[in-house]
Image 1 (tube, rainbow, N blue to C red):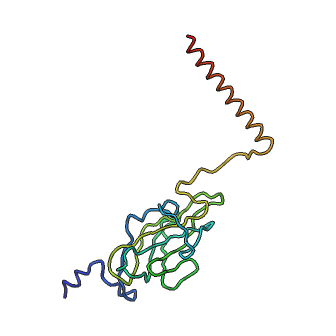
Image 2 (image 1 turned 30 degrees about the horizontal axis):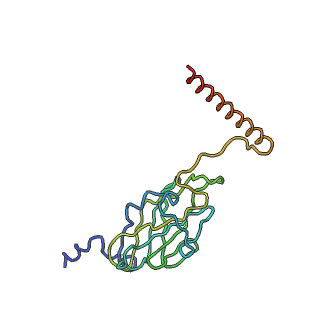
Image 3 (image 1 turned 120 degrees about the vertical axis):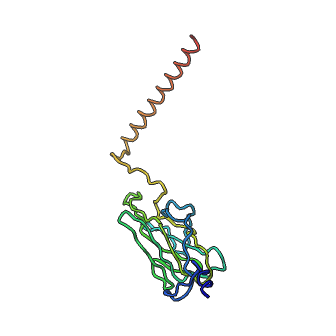
Length: 193
């Protein structure tokens, strides 16, 4: 009997959560923001999007024998400190379990100019499932509109348009032409010498 209990290891039922098996997320899927994750897909049945200020994270059980999710606990790192979110079988406006998939919307950490300033980064997750042991995956993300894996530098300085832009374009074009003439004169001088 003791050997049977020891043999269960990480597949031991999570009795405190109403039964089921507790499993962990695949470690390869952690340490990422929604924008930096490799698979971007917005699905109206799994959180929708893209949204202006929210990322959608979708988790999946990769094997049929794992059954369905009954709950998930997800840990994120933010500039403001760690955040823990829970998803249960009771759907809410910003999260739900859909059989062997689950989704959640989190703040994207976007500034008013679309820069990533405080994105949620997935650090760990566990799930209680109806099936057998294994791991689960971060299947896809739907980053907030305007988010990118490599945030760009802010645009600063005065905006140019109308006549000012036309003058700058003319000056730039003139400088390019002068540069081409000088380059041609230098090449001609090399061939003569």
